[in-house]
Length: 431
Image (cartoon, rainbow, N blue to C red; front, side, top):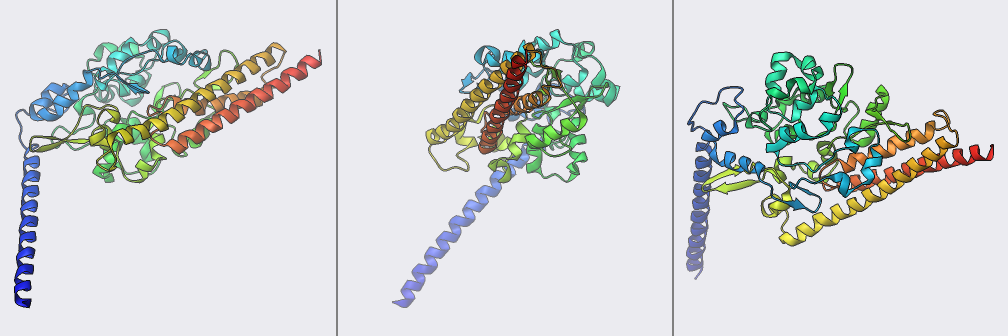
């Protein structure tokens, strides 16, 4: 009897091992097929080739999906690719940015295909002369122009003098080496900022690079000095307080608020910075894991290059790690975004009240010296509101941090309002 049991056990064990070996062989064969995708070359891609269609001859799966960035896939609850005026959707922005070009034109962005087209057509470049530094993230020609002109000259040359050189939005060459297809950094501003923080990009892992190539553009930035050198304000860290401290150290301002006279900062799409404070970042999840998830094309596994909201492909972007129904995951995202949007509207109300109070104080005769604290509160509150408002995840990249920042914005705006109201009443009483 014991011998019979032993035979059965050996048989079962052998069957299990056979299945395991078969699975392993299938997996190895799949990986070999995937590996074959890249050595095959239909054409040689010369260095500096910007036309995605040329790259697409060697990498048709990636090109097919990248070409979809031209497609308008419609709206998501707080984003998508349908262009609309955010000033019409959120009219408080007109006064919050009073005196700055964003108060005249601010639209929902379209896909990466339109990066240069939308920049050229925005009223902001027509109302105010923009430096060539703006080209850095909007046109694939930027690295070539930088090499030809030099970094400082490229930045300081007016955009209008360079725009005729521009024909592409995002391109394969922005992120890939044409010979090896390795991810590469092509924009000096990101390299300079990371080196200043002591980060050796040559030692970056492939997973890190799957975020770093995005962080070349999806970040806060400013133009430093008369040369308008594109700079990332990371000398003290990635948090909103660290960025504010960087600007305060330089006494930097983007513009003077037309109603209050406060020295203001305009924050630009700090997706990378907010993401660094979130759970996904701490867990090693890269930007590409969610926005460019792996998909199967026959026997080949490739990154989906149709960069768009993960809400458009929850199965690939979320369910790979989160074993919950798609609708549950969608609802979780919307809970975060709805909460953040609610806090944004409360922050806007508080800022408008602060602006009104400062205006009344000035009408009563208050000077810049009288209002120095109120103006500083206004600057700090607006910076925090803008940090979340201009960040394109509506809080999802770091929900608790987004809520904390907006709570501080509301608090600081109310302090500005209180300070100005006290000064205004004091001046009226002394008349």
